[in-house]
Image 1 (cartoon, rainbow, N blue to C red):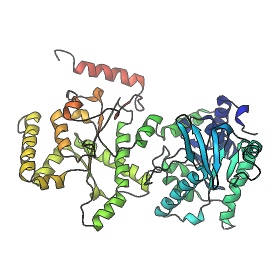
Image 2: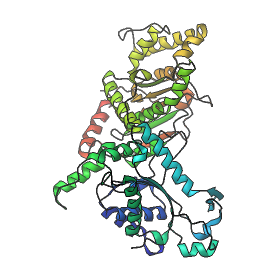
Image 3: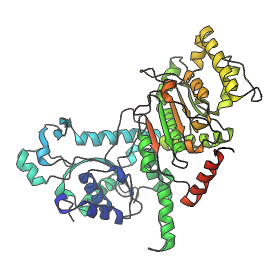
Image 4: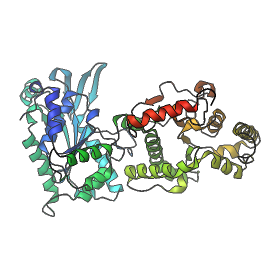
Length: 486
């Protein structure tokens, strides 16, 4: 079967992918028809539950953005990185020696080197795989570029008999599942060289960790193949359980955002995954600072300070667990506990009092509003008297879960304890849910706090935790909590 696009529509392509037994992650990120056609060809080529195909997987450890279009992880073929260019022949204005393409886009002609892009992703993977303890020379790797809308004969007619045609540049008429599988498996078997029949699940599991920020849970590589009867209730449960192991498209999109500047606000219903997004972004920031931390320490500069704050003490262990889990999926190891802070707001007050910023006030000392006002007043006094002390104690970034539990004055206080980006905005990241505002705190007017959230606020709309039968009575209880006269 040849996956030449003029012979297949979207529904046909999707049916091929859905019928494959291999595991495909990130399909919803593949919007271009040519990309989907290539993915469908790979899904049919590697029709086995041990094979994983990743669509646009993130490699969060990379110092520069590095997101290959497709990655294949297979026990026989090893790892393959595919860059897809869905242009027609008319959309390729020129091809320079060495593989530089001049491609027509809506906003003009741009230069691209698809094979170099795939190789860059491959070498980034190789470096990280070695950091995680793997031997990159023992795992087959290959980079490919695919032009799914162009046939080889038309390419040669346009660019002549000496047209740029390296072995790893594939065309529409090359998209035959059997041929593709044979070529990729030949690469994998050549690297094995008789030392083993297949790459082990442990080897592929380690490879999956490189893509820890993707919707893939690393442990799925060790999950045994489904043994339930096709069409049975057990299979239906198994498929549902597998679906719940992945991040939703909404969660994955927010985790992929660049949060190096501030501030950010995530609002959403209970169970939408705000905490997952917040802790994953925290882990990304923590992992991304590893090199900077070592450089600072070598120069005698204090390491970056990161804090994850909540109001309720009982939430702290869960937050710490999720940070550890996300960090391990990104790096393959646990973070050093002393290099970041996960705590609740009252403990932050105590810690700052021990550092001489203000006097600690017990909860029994007046109202919440009065105590926080006292902290703010004393913080301003300390900033004037000992600015170096306060600056030393400020955090490079502060993440706040269940921010609706905080007073507006507490948000103001956190802003003052947070360092700012180049635009003068605090690196403050808030997860907020109006529906869970059981303390009845009024939502702050963010602009009045000096927070520019234009284009930096997201609303998560889908609940993954509770069914409608649970949500409806819960919502009515919440309405009753704030009913007049109660």
